[in-house]
Length: 528
Image (cartoon, rainbow, N blue to C red; front, top):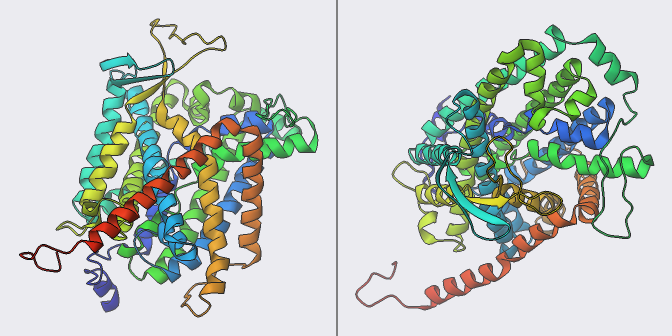
């Protein structure tokens, strides 16, 4: 008891407050994972694989991959329990350049784009309850910048930005307030998912839907065609033999894997976890296990209520809303909107809290603005939080001009106004491949560090080593190869985003070297 109290005070070596216990850490893992994806992406997955059995197997495989990665990361987290997490692991396993490229991509797109997407998701579903929060009610613009891009500030965008900036401000007020919000909202959305599962499986299951879905559970029905971006590869679907099914399965993993992503965010905050060598690996295992179990059961609930074709054709892909509408009628949309509002708010709190710690770690290494490497009087990286919050809020503003097959602008049939997409959605598509690259490199880093640092203290060793890490790497590489061939247009831009970090890295190193080589003015203390 006394040691736990001691661990909750300031770490004199870093200035952080070690205030995250095992429950808090597990809540951060689970809360960062559960956003709006589980309520939506099953529609697209069902279109790709075409049957109930394959839909469930996609989620089961996602679960196995996520838990395998989390168990592998546990060794690195116990070995290097410092702020920055994955950035630190890549830096230590390979070189500072690899750590920087991950941090650069995370700051530029991965974390910031996800926060922006979740923020707009929050505003969109709040608009179900408050219709005045509309995407077509513009405060500024829209201004078309080119044939493809525009910029605007709608009421919906303004609410999203306000939510992001509010949570950023909350997290500058200290870890205690941030973790309180995380625990409350993660508990609430976990209970919401449990309610959806219980209602779907136990209270409102449809004998007709179950019979239709599982009579031919492994036979794809009207799966979507998947066209390659390279002429040498064939167009396929899940119904065109084992190769088509394998490709459809890999493409379908994109939605489920990223609905289950952000589990690694707890490693970013390791400098604030009590007994991190124990609690970070354990929270990774507990949090991912909990969420994946809920995700698989949620899909069982969908299949218990809706026939597969209803899942494939759910309006705006809102599968959970379609399921609750069967149960509650017209009130289903409002109930689901309230659940997603809670879910997205809690998700963004965790993402905002954790992401700034990577910015902080990079700045401490001289690879980002020096001010972002300082803690405020509340012992949190406030400047890093503000920089992250401002950049993320700005990502909400750019728009993509949507066009039909003939290249003409898409118009809203109700208003006749031009329709716009969100730039961050494209950016997230672009980094799917890149994120998998960094996961593979990080897990491969376990093998590298066991060879280069055999005597390093390892309080926890990767479960199932070497076979489980090897299985994850093999599966992820297979998915990446399929995406490279069949989703090339959203693969190569992600590689470009990573490569843009190389000149930035060397520019920062050069500037840092110049500062170190420049003597302080005679009147200034040498320490300055």
